[in-house]
Image (cartoon, rainbow, N blue to C red; front, top):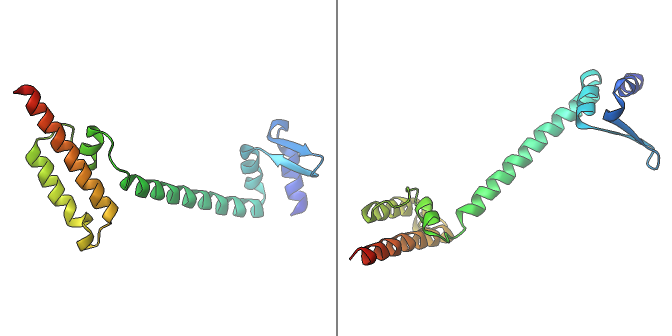
Length: 139
């Protein structure tokens, strides 16, 4: 096994491997590591495990980011409409209908998060104020 690994390492092009004399070890590029994994089973097994772990961590981070964004308060009218799942400028009845629909799942009384309900209320307030300002400008 050792000889197969050494042979695979020495078969790599120079730009794919670099000797570190202080630590007495080889540094491989990702492409070089994947090439060695094709011929050395134990390297292949660890690389498969590593790739799976990287995918798990990426999925976890994406889930956490989505959760964080779910509880960020909208700072603009466009964000408010997006938080309600509506296109920008949707009429007030649609805004109120979206609030009722989302409140069924986000309200703390039905198992939702308080922060999510606060975000929903702020989004509705921003949309209503935006419509009131538009009506004031028109009249």
